Image 1: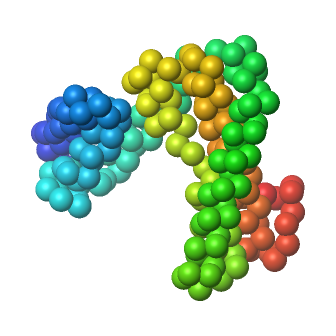
Image 2 (image 1 turned 180 degrees about the horizontal axis):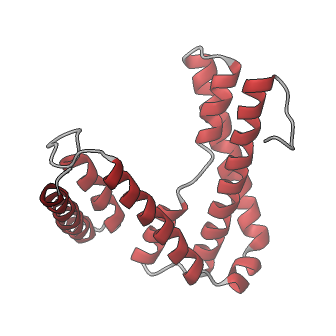
Image 3 (image 1 turned 90 degrees about the vertical axis):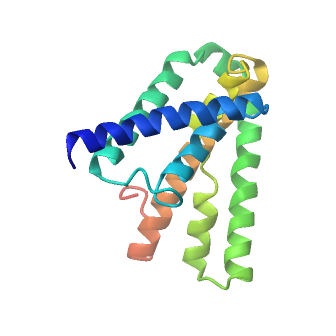
Length: 182
């Protein structure tokens, strides 16, 4: 990719995402909704102004790393610990509900195999902590009691989801669950 093409794509990403975030905010929605919509609009799905390539994927990965790093910087560990029991309760509900619903729909409605249905249920358990934090920050609630409960639950959901998917992957390959290899 030529440098000027990349710079034009980067400019299109930044300007469109910022404008659409402001539009979303003016409508009372979190800015992250506008940013997601910007990717759909200028990406390959609609206008095709931005193509998916290695450079864009690398920048996206760096962006996710920086977002999660910022989450860590802004996390009040004491408040997170204080929210512990409530966060665990919310996390269990946020894990079990999507797991059961995803599994049931995949297995009984779409007649998928047991392992495929478990994978679908498992993928639905993981939250997007980055979007959760951006949304909480957008409404200035990330340091509130409910924000800390939500953040704690999201972290636990992600941990449980990753462990579950690792175990399911191990099971799909070997036919058994081995905690060491997963």
